[in-house]
Length: 195
Image 1 (cartoon, rainbow, N blue to C red):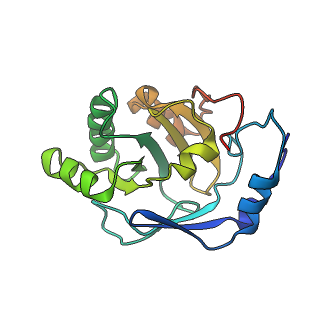
Image 2: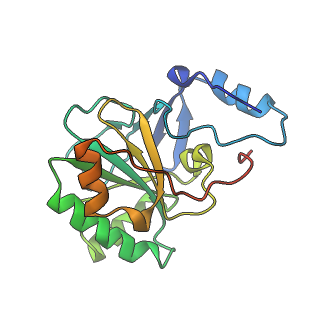
């Protein structure tokens, strides 16, 4: 079982359809581990590793570091796909929440769809949610989610505070975040880490 991972040494740059690894030691560590009963590597209470997204769509910035301290907003990272029929109404709900809480949260939706597919989605369904393409599903695998339709909630200091099902992200949850009330994780996590 892996009990800790040197999170501060992990930096990734997801660009277009490729994933370019800036620092490789963490990947070697993951690949060399032979434990059959590994748990997900990222969980509530962990610092968010430094992932630099450079293929943001629908965002006012060209790059976004997921672990950056954001002194005035929580970050809610949704894992979804345009191919996932329950994800579409969830994305509509997240869009409304983003619009109504723009000063409190930043919603980022990560999909394994190609950037062109996300562009097509945006033309059909404009949204204030930032979109990112991760065709390798690398970050999804690090959380150990059992399926799409899950979110990671990152606090203003870059800490993962909860892993939840996307359908549980609502105004009440955002109000609890803002008040500092703990949010319990409800995500479906695989029993073993994805190799």
